[in-house]
Image 1 (cartoon, rainbow, N blue to C red):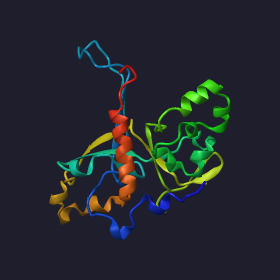
Image 2: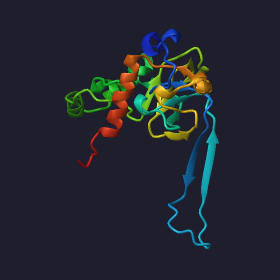
Image 3: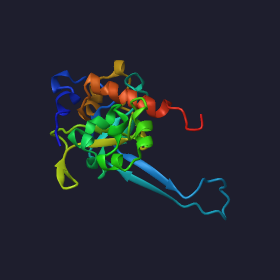
Image 4: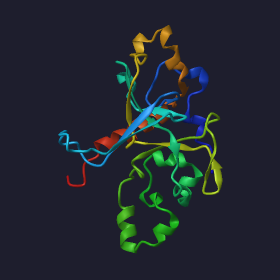
Length: 219
């Protein structure tokens, strides 16, 4: 598993902006999530509602609010999580998991085993497609010295990822617009651990835009 994506994935410390930006890796934020059995359509006394509220403080989170929209005491965050165990089954991914972030030749979205199991007609149909994104819900973060290693199918790795389906809105009175950052917001700036390079942030922006902007299957 090569870590070559790390070279250009993050800005060096001396080029890191003193403001929060889309894609920043941050720490120190509480992320609650709610689980319900069904919608609360009635609040009569005889109706009982089952729900769970789980609260976590992940080691690291990622900012998913566009740079120019960060402020007004709100920001959208998603936890940085481990890669899925099946990712290494695809050798093209295993060489550099950040390839999942970009469009690729259709046949590379499958492992060689899955590809060989397809019929010739299906292979031709897939190969004829324009370069697609794969694993649309995820964006992979390259290894960093600040990340703890974990086991991925018997190999240690520091690759992490975010899940676009798991986004939380956080309210914090110190989150302000870029032109209003003052000395008292120093704790917010200290929570910033890594900043994506311009190229990587553009990749995140494009995949995130495609995730939300793609037409539904019915259209």
